[in-house]
Image (tube, rainbow, N blue to C red; front, side, top):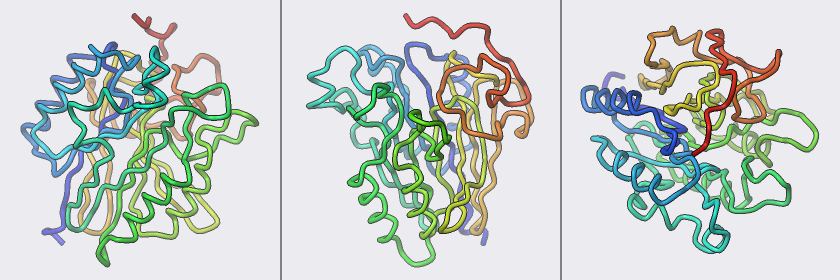
Amino acid sequence: MATDARRIFHLSDIHFGLENNRALDWVKQEISEKRPDAVAITGDLTMRARHREFAAATSWINSLDAPVTVEVGNHDMPYFNPIERFFDPYRRFRGMSEKVEREIDLGCLAIIPLKTAVRAQPRLNWSKGWVTDAALEKCLRMIDNLPAGEKALVTVHHPLREVGTQGTALTKNGDKALRELAKRPVAAVLSGHVHDAFDILEDTVEGPVRMIGAGTLSKRTRSTPPSFNEIAWDGERLSVRVRNLEDVQTGDMQIDDVPENALPPRTPGEPVAPVRQIPRVDPPVH
């Protein structure tokens, strides 16, 4: 139905500290002109969670003329202050605290958060995702409390799909989360982390779940230009258009698999979009 039409801008991996200011100015102008019903930012607002990076991220996000919900990414956890990381990991979000893991109810569609970035985990690489039982229960409870007929868009930072490599699973308990989400009225799971867009259908024993990933708005690109997803809901179906600075077609912006990390591709066979603008080296971290 026309009255159920909604538009959501899905941004991710802005990485203030290594941000692309041209891309940010463009996105802000698009939001001002197109007035989306909501903006979902799926994590990695900063490069190293420094105070100055959070100050820049807070200023930019608070200036957006739309309802905003923000997920926490692994780059947003304090890197250089272990006491703060363990005891007050969201302290640096205080300037936009009302937006963090915020549920946005759009009437026929609701944006529901699911936290995947944790302060610590029992493996060496803490940058990977982990869905705790508490986080999953909170997300499922919000979905179950939606009015009859209302669909959910679940926002995460890390894609929930397991990559199947021993010891380097992308998101611990991601498969469990996907099975539970498949039982519920979930239109899609929105994520970031891998820096290239995708739109895939993941099969589970409980049924399929659509997974939609956004690219990056930073200089830390993989194989495609800076981009964001413009998601349209017509009351029954979602459509996704990948918007980018170089007017590349959506299909050419999307990878067909989920890589196991968010580094630029380096070797043949790594999932990259057809544009294949593979950087020779990762941009330096200052």
